[in-house]
Image 1: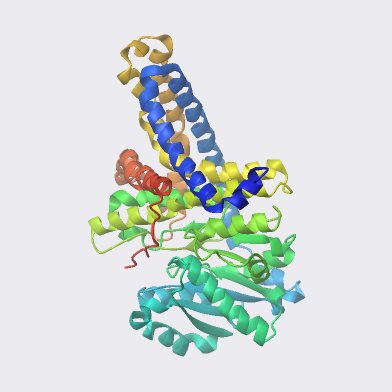
Image 2: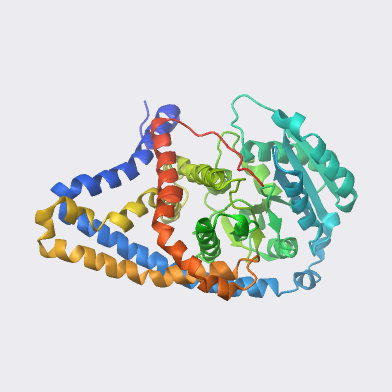
Amino acid sequence: MPKNFSELIDYYPVKTQRLLEILTGLIPWVVILFLLVGSFYFPNAVAYMVLVFNVYWLYRSFQTSLFVIVGYLNLKATINTDWNQKLLALPQTSEIYHLIIIPNVKEPLATLERNVLALLKQTFNPKQLIVVLAMEDRAREFDADKPEYIVKKYGAKFKKIFVTWHPIVAGETVGKHSNNAYAAKTVKKILIDEQKLNIDNIIVTTCDVDTVFHEKYFSLLTYKFLTCNKPYNRFFQAPFFMNNNVHRLPPFMRLRILMGDAGRLAGLQKPSGRIMNFSAYSVALKLLDTVGYWDVDVIPEDWHINLKSYFALHGDVDIIPLNIPVYGDAPESVTTWKTIKNTYQAEKRWAWGVSDIPYVIKNFIQHPEIPLINRLNKLLLTAEWHITWSTSWFLITIGATLPTILNPAFARTALGYSLPKLSSLILTTCIVGLLLMTFYGYLLNPNAKNKIRSFLHPLTFLQWALLPVLGFFFGMLPGLESQTRLMLGKYIEYRVTEKV
């Protein structure tokens, strides 16, 4: 019989996994139900919870405001730096190869070609770039001509273009994670095991097919890799801006995308240990090989590969920020309604990262060799991100009014009278942060011809009025659905976001 929690997890792996999934999915429902039921029976407790969360939100607002300013200045400084000149002082540069994995299935050829062309425009030597077109065998009939076209037209301009066809394998789930793993293992076998390239000199970058790298990305990445401490224990993350196509989105959806871009830039300026991967990122092939590559049954691969590496290397893993733009497409379709549906589906898939919480809890228990404060930081970071995803809308928009509406007796108390006013004062102060996020969102958008005029356009402030509605349908609702599915064991399937 198991003697402690760690042995219990080993003894009952399936049951403990399901228990942790249920508990994780219950948390947002407990918060929401406490707001409703507690307003009748514990109005004081609800009021204090709402006020504490408001103060927390104010702190996050000002922190993000500061970091987005710092991030923008860092971004401009990075873009204006000649990284190739700096690389001249590092003789190891000529030995570095970049392995760029582009998983794609039924994507438009124009989108794939745009990605490849951005790689050719790099200031780094394209003969040190190895491109992997990671195709899905299940779509071979649809996709067969695309890699053939790319290889024929651009193959000679890189060191090599590989084409891999990921087969359907029992025990795997379909998605970027399993395709990445298959492509990386296949190419590693050729480059390292057969051609005897040095695994220490290969950096893997994985990205979506719609990704467009800034021309200095791989020069900067090479410099950071060669000069950072413990490069084989590091991930490299650039801010991901979903504004390739933001000008084509329905007007009421643009502001939220631009603010998200500013938020991701701000997030990269956080202290060490508070940054996570998102979408396109880079890592040494040696690290991937050490930890066993991406898990083939875990859909949210970006956070998960970082967490897997963190625990496998006993907590000695961190992320080096690359303050240089990486562009991608926001969810889009041929009609407004289909764009709305695609956006919801994409948000739900991103919110499925909540499935990492049980994983972190299990490894938190099973890795006592990692300092407690470090494990707590990783657990709280993962939980904070996903739990606030589904609960913050309730706490911010209706949290202060529920107790006074549902409990008239409480509304006549001093706390009940003050609650809406205090909450309104705190959240009104957060507008400063929203203004800065909006302003820098427009500054970061390369498609805006006159960024200041776009920011001051009346449509911008009309979109502001819609933020609570958009936050409900594209934030809280998909987040809550993903967490409820996790609780019920109704796991989501990977769904490729449509490209136009």
